[in-house]
Image (tube, rainbow, N blue to C red; front, side, top):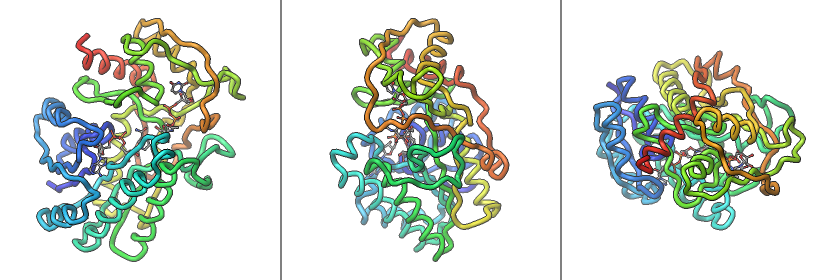
Length: 339
Ligand code: NAD
Ligand code: UD1
């Protein structure tokens, strides 16, 4: 049984990935500082899988602690790296926090990969690296555009750090560029736990439907899209979690074709904000209180993935529909609000 380190493993995507890793027979060690997650997530993972992963509460910004951790865990075979701060607006207000938490931490961990010869590394990147695409669907060949926020910049810089490290060491890395992860585990035992007012569409929808928020604002209906609202590629978090297991197995079985590889992880299907709202209403039977509002600054008009490379080379394809994802998000919202 290979031992895999999952940094940020109690977070939204990390916790779903830990479940899939354990279901696939991997032994998991989670490192998380609980800055954006709760220790109770561990109970959810245990309830789903029957296995309690090893958990170490640690802040990856503390270089000495990181070094000590790797001295103690010399049998780690691979790393899935989720730990990061991810609020775009906050990154604009406090860029140094983002460069420290998303870049310094990665460097400390990679130094230990090189030192202890840990060669399999999966990284959480984002479709944000593409900016406003020139053509759709967007493939991995599309140029990386100048980042519009420090958060986006940390993803671009991280990919470069990985590429540079892979070219001079035994490190092999896969960067997964996620499109828009939504939904929750079918069991409703783990899901997304946004702090404060959600910035992302689906948690805002479920919180409005449950009565925590008065009204959803649809940011713009005058974009050059069929219904005027922005288009995104919404991917079920369980499908996304499975992509990490497949990418890890690719590296462990030496199937990678270069030291640093990039894959788009999306469904390949674009959905507009209004389509998401309508689908949510249809599958849950809720009438959503929403209004059309001004455009949100910084939003791209439309982005969805060309998934051919992930389908053909990685051997991964999204299985779940938007309907399933929205229903699971709603079941999770009801569960955490005891309804
Ligand atoms: P999340 O905030 O739910 O999970 C991140 C976890 O990392 C949290 O549990 C947090 O406590 C932990 N963490 C943060 N800083 C840490 C540190 N210094 N030391 C130890 N632990 C630390 O976020 P998520 O949505 O699960 O995202 C996971 C990764 O995927 C992030 O790198 C994020 O940038 C990336 N990503 C997310 C999305 C998205 O929409 N959710 C999209 C694209 C990429
Ligand atoms: C966000 C992040 C991006 C990340 C991506 C993937 C921002 C600015 N960007 O992008 O870095 O890579 O998630 O998860 O946070 N919307 C509304 N009303 C709302 C909330 C959102 O209409 O209350 C609309 C937005 O205008 C957008 C769509 O819903 O068109 C999706 O928004 P959101 O969930 O915030 O994701 P992105 O902006 O795509």
